[in-house]
Length: 83
Image 1 (cartoon, helix red, strand yellow):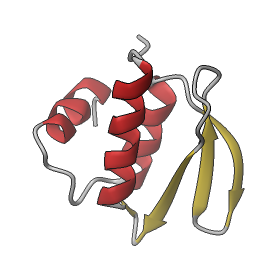
Image 2: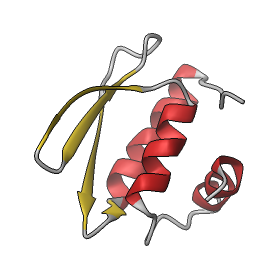
Image 3: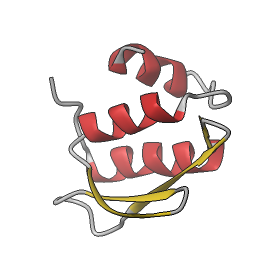
Image 4: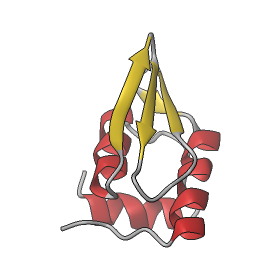
């Protein structure tokens, strides 16, 4: 799914049934990079954020509470989507 389209969907509050691979692509589009992974958890770091982001795939879907955490980080740190 297109990053901007997915972002619009998430900002509209539709956080369920988000494909995990699409969520990873969106997170990386904001400048986050994989710091480490263990099992189904992937930890992302951003050079401008003091907090790490953890995403977990459950049956190929991203968890809604982790999507909310991501959106909070984007707002708190004023991150922008890279082209």
